[in-house]
Length: 346
Image 1 (cartoon, one colour):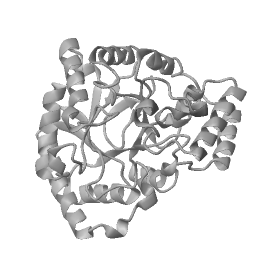
Image 2 (cartoon, one colour):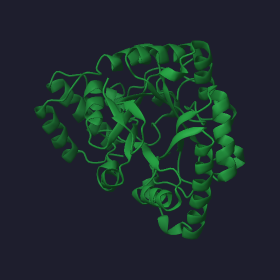
Image 3 (cartoon, one colour):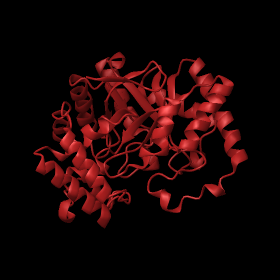
Image 4 (cartoon, one colour):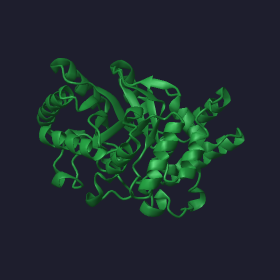
């Protein structure tokens, strides 16, 4: 299994990462444990979770449930040293802490709670799930208004959080830090602050990235190169769209779209047309659209690890069967042409 070093850190992870956000909701605990075992057998030693999981839907009463399932696996298997675990603190949300966002106190509380639920002494990568000041991700870019941000308040919050991150790192509770749903300005400011204060760098950013969502390709890609930050890509299959299972308005029972309808704003006429084109391209080349989409994401120059999730074991086995698939030059050209015809469909 190919390993990649995240950012400037000493953390080496496989190019594939097991996502766990359905563990405890769509995926029962026993099935989640079986998925972790199967992933490890395939050489996937990296898993990503968050305090807000499980989702579909995310609920205040289930916050921390997925971490508890992983923690039970850690205790039962005794294999903590065989895996690298990434988790996250919720940004401002009524899901946790009565809507309090990320500050020194809540960061300290979230880390301690995650350590307890995960039944571990150290978290390998701890991420801020979305910025305290707000984010343009989750289809919020249509109404994003950074001019409404309070720069002084943002700066003060970053300094407070950075100082607490340093204390948490020095206490040995977290090895490395990262962000999620961040912007190029946010990433460069975080790491400038780290350089100024001796605090921990943000080694990674976990943003959405797929054939249908390529907002990372410009400013963020430049940031990754210049700041030496690795992308952890979530939703590389566009929440299941790129599998082709929703073609023609289909909503398979138990699927994500059968629960939340439009996949968080991803299902649009333009996205359906783009998906149809990518699935047709895969068929033209005699390849599986899932394997094509994941292989494309994995070879991007800024990629640290591609996070995929599977609701069921058969889905996981299908993904694992394509881990060695590589794109041909002809297929890359076809993807580039399809992207020009269907740019940023949601």
